[in-house]
Image (tube, rainbow, N blue to C red; front, side, top):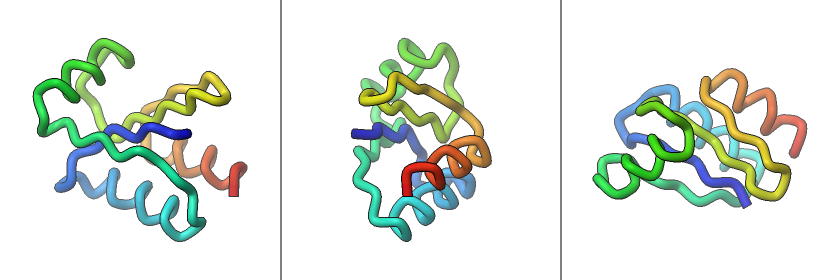
Length: 76
């Protein structure tokens, strides 16, 4: 399962979520407006930047919406 750290107001996050929804990919949306989620993002990824994707099944983590989109396309 993919965890996707986002902010609802972030256009880059919306772009990634739209593609994932379009391809019916299941993911856990984690909004960092919640302080605990923000702290988890920083602990896992090292910085407060969204979107941030964690694919636990394949041990892959990445920032940057375009990189995430290219990766998601390989799963669809």
